[in-house]
Amino acid sequence: MAEHTPSLKSTAQDQHVEQEFYVKRAKLYPRQVHGLFATWRLAGVLSLLGLYYAVPWLRWDERQAILFDLPARQFHILGLTFWPQDFFYLAILLIVAAISLFFFTALAGRLWCGYACPQTVWTESFLWMERLVEGDRSKQMKLDRMPWNAHKLSRKAAKHALWLAFSAWTGFTFVGYFTPIIDLGSRLLTLSLGPWETFWVIFYSFATYGNAGWMREQVCIYMCPYARFQSAMFDKDTLIISYDQGRGEPRGSRKRSEDPRSKGLGDCVDCTLCVQVCPTGIDIRDGLQYQCIGCAACVDVCNEVMDKMGYAKGLVRYTTQNRVEGGSTHVLRPRVIVYAALLLIFVVGLGYSLAQRVPLELDIIRDRNALYRETREGLIENSYMLKVINMDSKAHTYELSVSGDYPFELDTEGGEIRVGPGEVAAVAARVRIDPYELKGGSADVTFSLAARDANNIAVTETGRFVAPVTR
Image 1 (cartoon, rainbow, N blue to C red):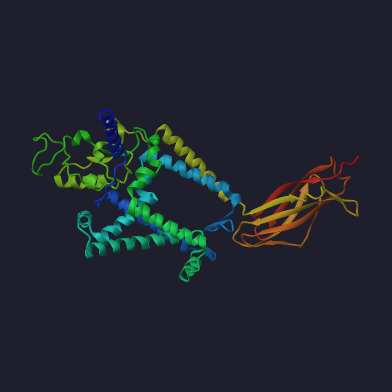
Image 2: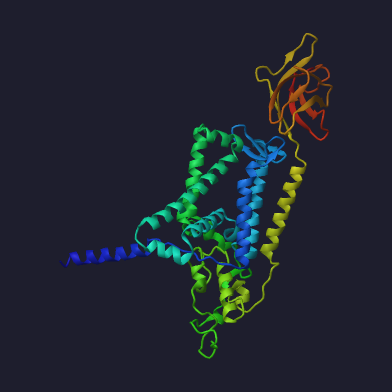
């Protein structure tokens, strides 16, 4: 028994540790809140969802306005068509997005999480549907506590039916960005979707249903990496949501007619509404926590309570650590200036690059079977295969010419070069020169390709002309 007792004690300790690290999730019932920030959040949700669901249906020059056509390796964005060769623009766009995140986080904390993150946007939508079917917070809690019966089953079934329908439409719309959505819809109605399209519609539908309907705050707390490294972008002048402990403590309940100072109380009435409205279930009065997504729901509801009690607003508010400690806030500070300068440079650079972008590319491939050949006339000839890529949304007819330090002659097959929108044309070209005109045995030759019907579409590429060394 003496040898067995430590083992039991050790097992109990292990179980205690396991309970601390693996706490079963308690379902949250966020209370609906009204106020300035709730209005902003609602406007953001409606705007972003409206854009997401409407954009695939927009048309541009008889095609879908925004379409990422992966099989054709074409990415249509309004009047522009991008190719894999334009990966540079995607890289710059990602850099702009990253710097924007750093800039706005340094200024005002987790604005992205609270107002624009897809997890927040879709969770708000699912919460609205839940309230529509099951009622407000108290009714939802009462419904979950009651035993299963016909009323409870019908409510739950209706809620999940709404969630699944909304998720299915979300998955369908997502695939509609990669497959023309009108064609996708017609094939869906006839049950003739391809295997990959079917997979991604189902996958994205259930991802939306699971993340926004079931996991909710768990995604923000445990899965999202941004919550872990956000503190690296905060400083004492970053706007955060904070509880004014000096004004609110000690907290306690009281009647509206009572003077809290006479009872030794602060302005906090300890109503816990700030906890009830929090979508991640934290108590903002415990200080800034990484689970806070900056939605400001606690600010709105606390201001309502302060109004009812006749106290000044702002017990919970957007502020900075410097301001809380009695100092002043500095908006223009080194990191903000650096982020703003970098953001401006990359945005201007991206805009200029797009404005100067030529929707035409020319690839030169030398004939590898023979370095050169001698014609009957005694000229030295090199053969090339030219790949003409029309990255415009319109067909063009091009004119090809060659130039260089020597008098090269060009001969192409097939006459004029006409390439349709988004197409690639292969053009066989031969370049000749009198060997006595060429010094050194080889030289650069410049191919110039210009559209006959558009003055601003022209490119030049340099190739190598090889000839025997003349003595």
